[in-house]
Amino acid sequence: MKKISLITAIALASSSLGAASLEEAIKGVKVDGSAFIRHISNTGADDGGSDYIMRLVLDLSTGNKSGFNFGGGLFYHYGGTPTFGTRSDGAVDGSRSSRTAGIGGNVFGVSTLWAQYGWEAANTTITGGKLKLATPISSATTDRGVGALATSNPVDEITIALGWFDSWSADNQYIGGIWTSGNNSLGASASMGNNLSLIGVNGDYDNFAFKAWYFNIGNMANSLFGEFNIGKEYSFTAQVAYTDVYNSATPALSALGSELSNGAVGKEISSSRGLYTLQVATKPTDWLLARAGFVGSFGSGYGVALNNTASFNIAGKWWYDNFGNGRNGFSWNGQGGIENTHINLWYLAGKASVSIVDIGLDIAGISGKNQFAISQGNNGQSESGNKTFYEITPSVDINIAKGAKLSAYYAMVFGQVDAQRFWAQVSYKF
Image 1 (cartoon, helix red, strand yellow):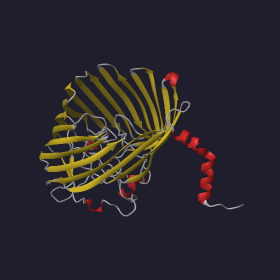
Image 2: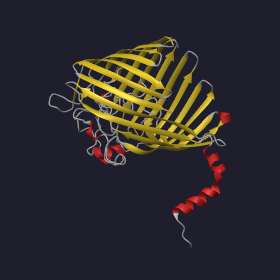
Image 3: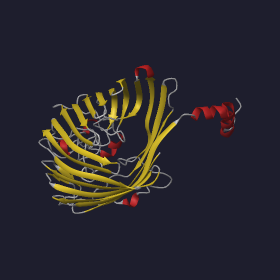
Image 4: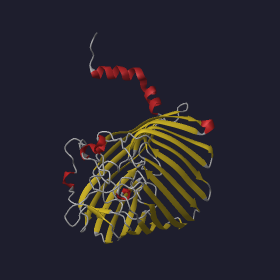
């Protein structure tokens, strides 16, 4: 057989395809994504550290081809929420490109890869592959699952979802909280092998909307989520979630095996967690939005979600995001998963738009037997305890061009927690 060079082979292949074929192949391809560069600087008696965070997300899909749709996405992320002692000196992460191996949170690779088929007459689609885990108790931005999801619109106002995932990973699960691995260096590549099944119903009418979802995590937990909203210009929203963790919960966590335990903090894991939110909001004009709300809990814990904030109505910027592993907030393996804990949160928030500038203000009060975690305690190490404290955070967004935004906020935390944060970001959505 006669050997040919790689360049010659590529040239022959290109000529056989032809210009028209290449044009036809990319015609109709949909591109969606975003990118940002962020800097965080923390100060105060109970926090510290600085870091850069950079992210690029690119999603592609073919669009409808005789009922079929194929797609995939790339995800690059560097850096994380800084804690005490974190320094930004290593942000370049080496020459040529970032080295992600062995660094929890950093990643560059294929984020999603899926195939979809839709029946137009039945308003139904089935999607299978590696998918974004977009549910009311998880984060579509960072959580992933390998499995299948079916959605249907039997009538215009109703959407039904059925899903099953053979393995999945929530971004907050792997490096902290009450379930902590003895080998955290493997955590970033770990997946939950406990099958995740779900069924959800969403309704959206002119002045009324609702959500009702059920989740089962095999050998681990059952979870419920509900939401009720009424009104547009003046609205009221109530949310409730409940998670029952099995007494003999057995996590099947790849790469870490049986090392997953709560021994790192010596706390008993709560088996019954409940959370509810109440919010009133008004948007009397196009340039003004105001919200006020309360979050409370019931049962013996408040860790009800796979993600630390999920889709719950809250305000503030710092109190739920001072640890990159989501220990604070409502994560199922965070501080709210400790036995005999509860949380109270009240908040006021508003945003006013003037030309290309959005000016915001968040005021929040946090209390309860919350086991709140801080990154710098009296001994210079992270610790947790029941804290009552307040957060006041002014913010500004400047819409510098279509899709491009410059954002910043300064969080001031006082009471039984003392911390400050300056946060700045430039972002682009395309």
